[in-house]
Length: 258
Image (cartoon, rainbow, N blue to C red; front, side, top):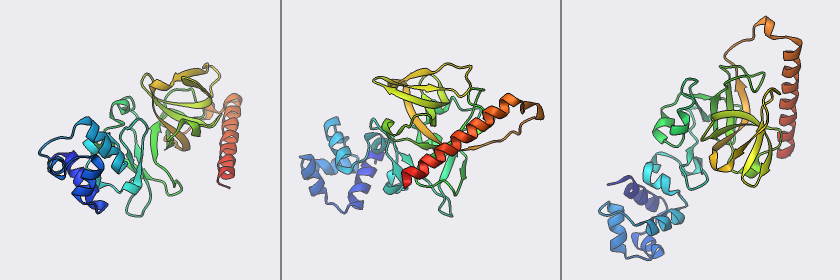
């Protein structure tokens, strides 16, 4: 029995539906549907699309993941009919946050939609982060002070481009750059403009076709301390400016909730 047939059987049973009722919705005979569910034959694309819409589950998910392992209520749907993100919790009910390894950050571009890759990542739980899907990404380079190499940016998954807010920071997963942490500026018809907090770097445009995921800054985890000589007047000013920005974002989030 294939993953698809197992998922079809599981979804039908979960909704307490008969084979005849599902077959009627698909405009096929019950006998034909039974062969799909038993794994004797595979449904053609047009029937697969109907099955996907009927159960409101992506085709990618139907074909690749045993969804009986997850609660449907704990899945975050991705655009373009791609795989969904399971929101996993620990034994105390806290959301588990996957950690993308520093040395393997570029490999994330190949594995971000692979459930086996994601399930193999180490996880942490931060009880103060609730209400969404979170993931930790390594900071790299000097474009976003005061975050040093070794810092992890914990991001909340952004489900729609319209949710992006000007001057807030996000982790962008793109075809060309892999993982990058930048400040969103504005939309264009075919892309979005972002900038680094380090004024040495010019703002640039990310084509929409290159974007795979976007994660909004939720918090940061520093793994390296600053050396005394790093706290020059310029660095302190940048550090204070970043704190002010974070405080502004927190106030805006509180205002949005109210």
